[in-house]
Image 1 (cartoon, rainbow, N blue to C red):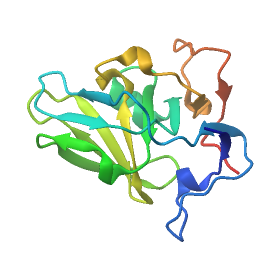
Image 2: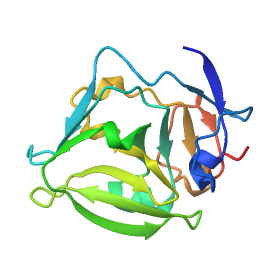
Image 3: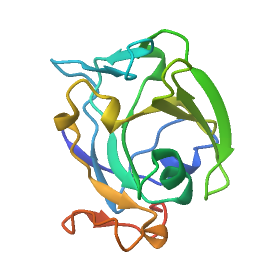
Length: 171
């Protein structure tokens, strides 16, 4: 398993439909298979997910959308490759919003308890991100970076050791 740098297309979408890995500021692991699956779901158990893949990106995000949805100063996410290989059980409700970047994000939450569970990106349909708090083992969340620091609130202190981006990283 080699560490590779993550190109900005993962955030803004590669028009050719391929994931690109090249030199950039964000380091990720390209290993996609692991021994122990990541599992999680909503608070009431009506929506569940499991994946055998390792996350390719883990971040805290302080954009205004994440602040509003989380009800606090940031959202915390693990992004996985191979959406088609993530098993999701139960029916989630979906809604769309344009992020600060202008790209559409599709948020999914439990219609019973209201817990946000996962989100997808219109420009990158192969990726899926889950909310760190929705993991059965949330201690497995290990953020790589802080994104949208420009929107950070003074009372929302984030680990100063994380790589910080004012917005989304660019290649």
